[in-house]
Length: 484
Ligand SMILES: [Zn+2]
Image (tube, helix red, strand yellow):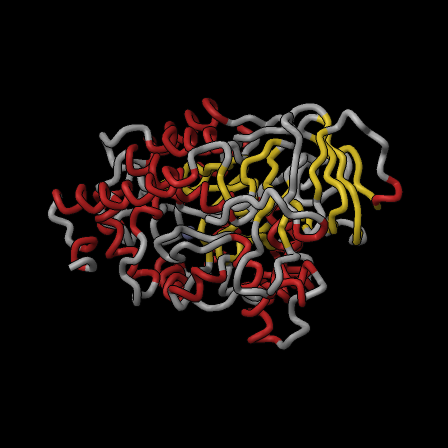
């Protein structure tokens, strides 16, 4: 960890603030990439409470001596990044089944995950969310779909971790009800009964969902995938979500194995199957959506169905490359996701912009995706997936003050004069000078400020050790073998 520089000045100085973070805050002298509207070379961002109240060039900055000032000299301001697919518990099972296909990887890891408890989830979620915040993420979803019996309140554990860190959280109550005995992929020991799932999901929505404008906690309904869930659960879950006014999420069209499974079991391709079950619409976003036909993309665009592109995970599992540039061209919304850490170890959300850009260009040429489009995927595209495009995803007056300040003037980086190029093209993430969520500082100079930085990382390692031990106590050697 690089300690904050206190002696710098001019373009090499740190972003500094006064003592207070409440009331009025103004970021000055910053390069602004608002995602909506033209970029501003040297501008200001005015914050009142948890909202942005003004964005513009420095020459037009209001004279506000009472405001807390943040010097943005040498920094790029972007909207806070939005992560739209994750499985935080998987922080505790990274590095396993490293060379497996999705189905091989899942069948290796399901028995390990069956051993998790609330303590594992709490530590894994703390580390996973802290890691996301350090990569510029101000809002994250999570898809938790393994609920072994008698292991504590796993959903509450991850919500508590997010609340402590202070980022916006959209946990999706996931589920599986189609085990091996019903033709599904997971062993029966990790699936739940349909009635229990619907009751627990309704309970989670009723207990936690906050639909207010500046909400930090919204719940989605998220049966796991076509190969682990019955058609009845998909249909009932959609009815439940629409009754409660919450969003729907699941994995879809991730691999060709899944497509084959759907053809064999349901006589149709994954998107056709979801359409039949009532799962296309503006309240739905799918994880992955790699193997789409032209017709599938057209249906996404026509219905407002979104998708979470997870390029590192898709590459790690050899799943394929989603048709992102074609989806954008045809008007289908795409956001980014790091996916669970067990299939994308230590992946940063900022790095997924680069990964997305390179994947599209490798297939379709250098015009396939620009750095600005990659930034839009990570911000406004994610906000749309979560139904929050009116609150998040751009730097504009009236939106929530979720802002990442990236330091782009380091000596080696200073040769790149386009700060958005510096952020998206480079392998190494620029230092995160400041991360604001609703105007509150969560990260400063690459260090978590709302929670103990190092202890948060260690909580993830402890969760890994605990899960390994709990699995071994049950005779599950998948985690042990890799370490021997
Ligand atoms: Zn996933």
